[in-house]
Image (cartoon, rainbow, N blue to C red; front, side, top):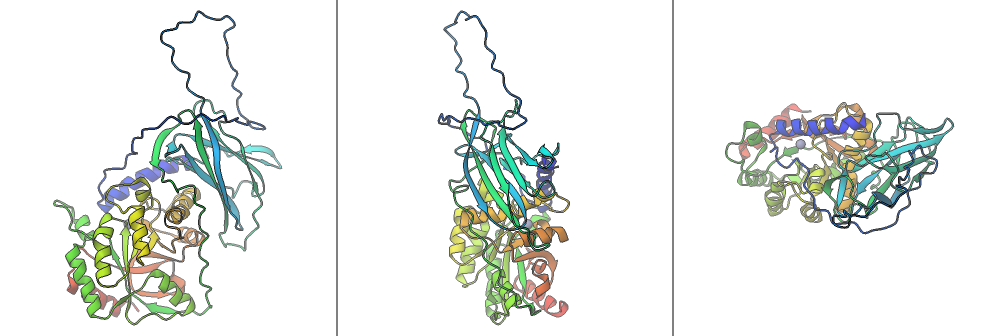
Length: 459
Ligand SMILES: [Zn+2]
């Protein structure tokens, strides 16, 4: 199922992009120039594995040697385990990782996962492919054998032979409280050490696999008191003038910078003070006081104009915003989207950074491996790059269901926003927060009318 999930995901991305009015350019994988790998000796250890053995063939008689056009024998493809990190936790175990060379994730290379249980040595059921289409792989060991020894190795794309050391994983996670959704996560980094493998995938940033993932900030311990607060959460997308010829959707999603400045000037004149979703969580779970007239400004999708336009204008007014980013965009250096460096600068200046998944896809109906990859994976991408776990999640295209909510909670997010309208929030709605969509044509008067409308109609 995971095998197809990748293509379904890609289709989903294309449809979502088309629906959102995004440009369809730059979807394709960047082409790579790969430097020859350093020659290292790696002994593949096929012990106890159902690997077909490669029989070397040699001709008994030395053939006359043509000396002119000797093609160099390509080095045999080989990978090594460059790193393993374990995040201990209770619950089921997830093993996952990357397949890469020195500079890029590699497509088209697969891993083989099998385990030794009471029934003997078993492979993942046929059709279960832990590899993803961009050099990532993951498998959740729930539903197979929760305890025991698991093995992972990289397989040769043609022969199926193991071409990495066999990694042994003991799954000894403690059981969790029922339904707590805890996971023990084991990250494995397979590095190409010989030959040329796979198709080039996204460029790796140097710290992507080297930095251990920060542990999530503990939740504020709820004091058990049910609370309700009324805080408008405005939803912006582009803060720029839409390009000539933009369709109605794109125009509606775009607030030009001068209009955005009018919005903030109006909010300032009315005494609104910006807070973050972090503050809202504390107010709802702990009763931490909020300033008078609190408001939250959110920006979806991570467009570059959020950095070039929204960020400086927010600073003019001493305001903060919450930016929901689709992490594959900065990971692949996609044009038109904020980079990790820009996001780092914004976070240092007090802006809140949240996740909008790895890809901008409808998460409904996807299998768990894929959902965890999108929801937890995007959290880890932010953690690796910016050094903190994001506390807030925005459902891509506003689509979600109870199962997705549960996974968002289990991935340690504190709050999640929807695209449903409203401004009343309670301790029960932290993962389904309502927002007020800001329309591209709104002047300050339009914004004032919308705030007045929800003030009247959402109680
Ligand atoms: Zn979005």
